[in-house]
Length: 142
Image (cartoon, rainbow, N blue to C red):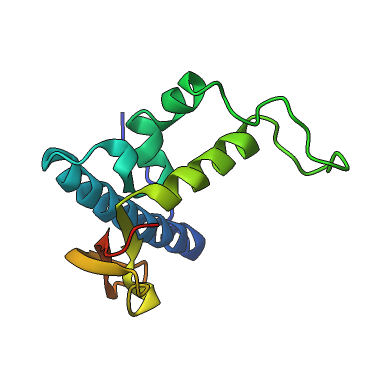
């Protein structure tokens, strides 16, 4: 029985590179959020990625809060409305506004005025450029 070899085309390599770049930023974001978690910061006080928040109980917290917005159609009954995800995402957005810590890509060049960088973590983009995610802390109350 021989080894089956498949030709690799350029599209495959480009897709793999893009996937690796996306994975790198997600990994840096998760590690930064996990560092805060291990330091004693509660998950609902950290806004990293939606996936990290969901893994650490945000969806369960939304259900426990009574699933605010679920089952309520917005005015005009828009065709592009997800009756499960849109209310959850709106709730998450409100929760994000209250979080004292935020993990963001450094592409903004400088943090918003009411935030301070407390840590950085590097990653490589799909083009192999070195970039950073910042761990920010709020300097003013919302």
